[in-house]
Length: 325
Ligand code: ZN
Image 1 (cartoon, rainbow, N blue to C red):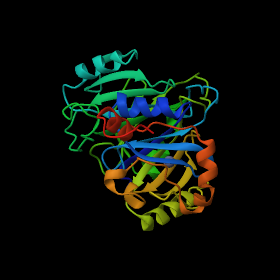
Image 2: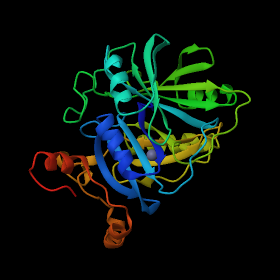
Image 3: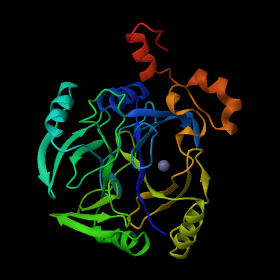
Image 4: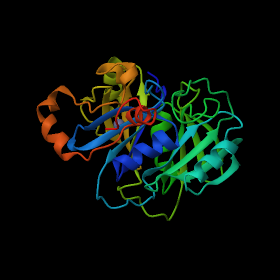
């Protein structure tokens, strides 16, 4: 039983179109699924990643129009970091500044070059040139030259009032190992190792807890191979009295959820079946997809969800090959 690394990170956004424009146009990720929040079908759930939205490349957003901004603080994932190739950050610092967003860095931290900035909702992001080769293939049909394009997730930063709160769960139960520290940052790496396997715990004594809202992370999901392993993980977490949920069918993966001892919402998600479960690879993210149990609501949802212009349609429109939607 091994955690294979990060599966996805889910955060809250206020405006679907701004979110799509930033993550596809600005950062060059692929919109791999346009769907609704299965637990709250009146709102969008947007998934971005590499060509297929492979586990470890995915960030997702619940879109809550009109919601108040959250507060970044403890008991929260406070930063999502993406991996970019060596010598890319010069390109990226200009790129991000050109779209009107302030950048911090590049600076060195734990032997890696880091560029920090916020997304349009204030969500804290980093681009990191990792200290080891990242073999993952980027989405090459996006807006970023392939030699600079995002390879996938690098890490998440989990802020805790006392970092000891989260560590025993990470090491003794989830099987992470200590992989260094820098000032108040303590790095843990999933047993599988390799790209996209890092959780940094930031010790922030005297800091207020975060409040969920736009610009904050809702939860982080860790990868496991299959449903058989998930059942075993569920037993293990139950034995540790962590209050894990039943298995939920997320259509593109199966999930269980629990709060780690520092109150951050963790998910454990299967690699299968992936985003081609309901549309072919070439068409990922090009239309609203609903799970079978929500199809009866399609007409109603399409009337109430705010219309969005999608990247593929926009590109076709620019080329004069069709009309924007
Ligand atoms: Zn999730």
